[in-house]
Amino acid sequence: MLIKNTLYIYLKLDLLNVYFKEKFIMKKFKFLAIFLFSAVIGLAGISKSSASSSDVIKSPDSKNAMYIPNGNGFTKYMSTSGLSQDILNDIKSILNNIKGQTIYVRDYSMYQRLKSLGASDITNSSDEIVKTAKAKYGYNIYMVRF
Image 1 (cartoon, rainbow, N blue to C red):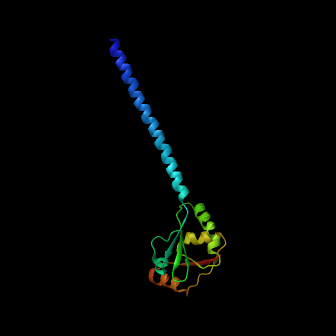
Image 2: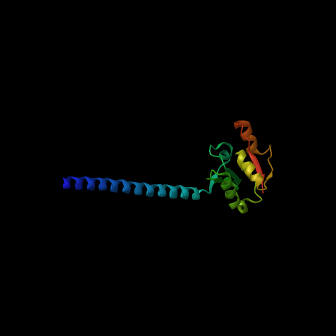
Image 3: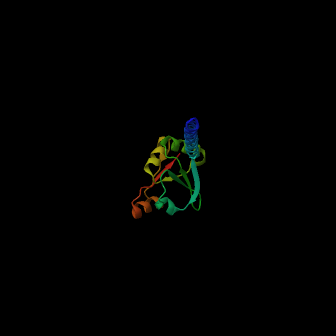
């Protein structure tokens, strides 16, 4: 009987040990998940790529994007953040690079953010890109300059 009780207690302790190990491992995974989530948020920033005039007019990923003419095409700056304040910080981080240049924006909320940072509206309805976007696709393209 003593051996049976001892085995029973040992088995219970072993099960508790497994339970606590699993709980400890789950806690580690929670911390890892929180860390990875924080790292991904920290990676949010602004991406820079080349674009054509047709991208300015009809690109499906124009949310939080700015297009700046660079001679034979456009440079596309796009914020990868989803938070409004982070998008403003992204714009501020490249402000020196885009001062004095015409900026084309299709997203109205991005247009408002640029205006809130002091950009002047220079939208010209006779501009070829603005005219084409409105006539063919029904999009409004805004032009601003710092």
